[in-house]
Length: 421
Image 1: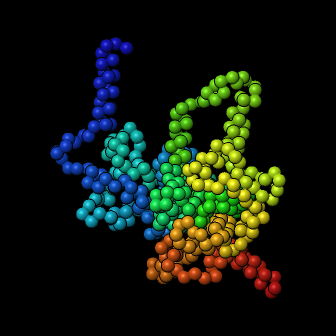
Image 2: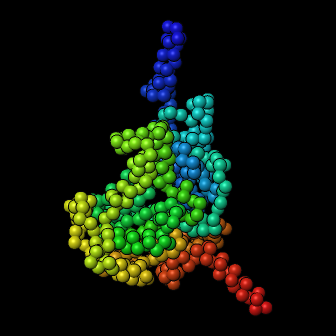
Image 3: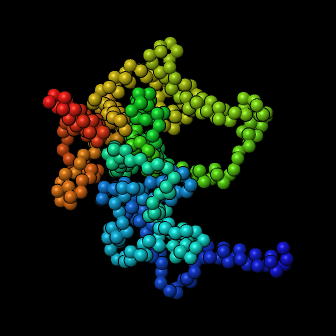
């Protein structure tokens, strides 16, 4: 490369850095950008198409790309929000913005184009959502329990937002804190939103028993594990975090075995990284084991992990649990609520660590017929409406109004009458 070419290359690089990191409009000249007038604009747009779509219009909100290429979220197939709705739901009275300007703060553009400049590419001010349809890479399957399970998961998220100091929700916020700032102890309620899979499905008996173990060992008031319907793991909020992790791991490239085992040789047992990692994970995650003298009971292992739990979170070192007692807890309607997509367990005694008694049942989604009469749209009740709704027999039978179960009942009734005729 000649001196002239080197100079041109350096100038081109400087120009790229300047356009990316410095403002085009100098301070005090020209109009301010809308994101400067309203710094929360990007979060507001994400809420309008995400949580706002689910709560206000009964839509499906946003979902991640199943390939986990980046953290950008896309509109779900049943999303009912358009940009005009987002403009109407203003949360800052003195802030004015046009519909076309709102589009410029989304990811609806191609990189390295003139359109990207209009969308403030590289400035870090846009809402990380795209209003385009998801890439058509997989077969689109929409299970019958889609809306019911989505609404049920949203109830758990809304419940956690009501009690941020005492409710730990995993998968909604991976940076959540385990300590209750008011009491200084471990948060008394835990909730888990998981992906579909046999190893973590709430309907699996082993998962249910482990939740009872967790409740009693950590002295919690309540523990809940809930998931979305089949083929909907891309709607789990944590998928955006997985996309960021996938991007970092992809940019890293292959990992060298020498980084894990210095003396590993090809063909040895240590060379099988997957098996080695799984064995280490199983060994490190073991906290509770079966009592050798009485196999009907279990107790914690005397280890560094137990010492940490005892010193930091006040876990009892001499804790002893009973499998039979846990089974009775799981099968008691007043202490456990289980259905196809959710399992919740509450403490047996009245020693509530949170200071107030919790409901002995899970509020499940009910259809909002009042809204149907007013607007002609049939949706499930919002979380606030469902909490204000009176309790009844529908709260005593988990999964009673699950669409799959309702249709099966109708089918068998029709078949019975047909055979009778």
